[in-house]
Length: 281
Length: 301
Image (cartoon, rainbow over the protein chains, first blue to last red):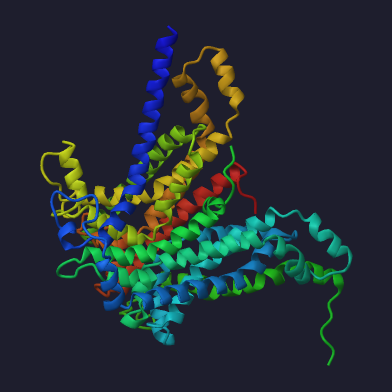
């Protein structure tokens, strides 16, 4: 009897670990395959049956990508656009978030609703008008234009994330400063924002990553090759006559490392920014 | 010159609006004005360029709705969205149930879950494009050696296989979100419920049916609406890069069609009409989501 129970438990345990292993394979294998292919050479890549370990570790694909394509330029452009739009969104968004989190006034919940709805609208809706407006303003094919386009979508996200962060900071902390006669901007700047700093950093990183990942606006607004960002540069490999998979995936690996590293840093916060509210029973 | 001085009570009353002003001015310029213009463009005969062009009323909508592609792209959007919702929720729930226990290495496993979420969409599209490759792709090899299929599958060049493959990539990227949210939902179900059920002689299946599922109701509704909003209106990169709506238009969602109308065929009017339809549907889903969040007191303005 006791023996049968231990057997049953062992079987359950084996099934559990087998399922976890399967799950991890599904999650991790594409990453492994990207890195493996990026390191490999033609013979190892185009062999059937495929080889599961690289046939060479010379990193030829990386060398070719770095020397033959302006991959650093693309990454720099990505960085500049994502960082610029994030900075703009934080500057414009923090005070708005504070205004939505504190005080009692007419129309507060309506305004919050507008922000939340804005955050959910598909970017497609803005790409056509922004494209035609930018032509009129001479902003098409400029990185500043792309920055503005990203800013439009980061701003509601920043406002909403920062609002929930301010909501979680008790008002009592501000009371003392208030009694001493400090002005509201002073309180926000000197009392509340320093406490909200980790949340502000997470919001900034989250917004930065959205900008890093953005493809549709980048592809549409910017056309000259020297202004391409990483996403457009990577996409440009598709459709080449012979697809150089080692180079493509080498570039993809380089482009993937920064967001994955940043995500692991802020994973604690990331759900808060997604669900637009807490997950409660 | 004396600065304008307001009474202190007026100043107090205006303070919140002063905080909101910069944000709303910025939003008005970069968001609301373009959005209004997007809707306007659908009523005008613009050809790519600045300006609105000639007013044509509902003509663009008539063109779109009577076109041969409209029912097809709408149906593809429905299939795409429903496929994403079903699989993200199904796999998310299954994996959450699997991981909702203590085991060595749990923190590491959960950290790995962030990977598909963190990878840029363009990079994900490239990796999967290579995995799906007909000649040398590893997926065909794996499926054939395990005996799952007996001949190679043309993952991206056949219908309806292509739509299924794209859905697979999207689900791979999104299901960890489902897992994380369901795990959070499972945490909110009190352990005493299960203990009480056990005392009453309920088997695990009954506990699942009568305690777990009702306990996850809110998370389920929230996720359904959220994934719907995202995959219906926002999914672009994976489809655009891997199939560009093909083959034979069978992966062309209404979003992809609108984009192609504008930037491939240069029909700004019909593209805007399609975009406005996408906007209206997204708005409906967003409002449903907000109404639900409000009713279950998950969001407070």
